[in-house]
Length: 137
Figure (tube, rainbow, N blue to C red):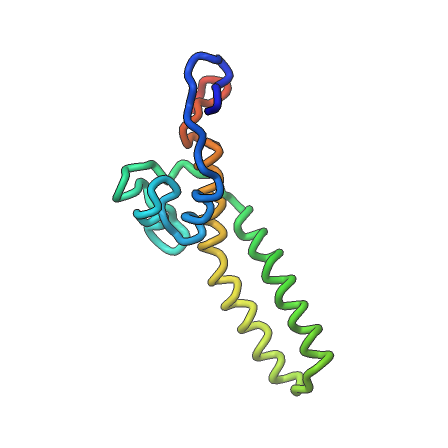
């Protein structure tokens, strides 16, 4: 149980690991049943199952940065390993690696953004349950 700065109203802590797992799956971090996203990368305004507000997040560029970091390590590692053990013409590799990069980046972007939104929800960041420290929203 966490206590707010004014020491008057205790608030229940939220399960960070469970929320991140729900976010990775594209589900509401609160109940795990409703959809987190209304469209590909746009968070739903509220969960259809439990009513939790989901549009309060400030994910900004962090999901894209993390996806670039992950995809870059996977693709560069795969390219180096393939150069060591494989022998395809350069024109074939110029078709394979950009396609692989694009598919991997697009498939990871939504789960990573969902995990970031869920982390913010679990830690009560940016309006997800905690009052603003200066009394503003």
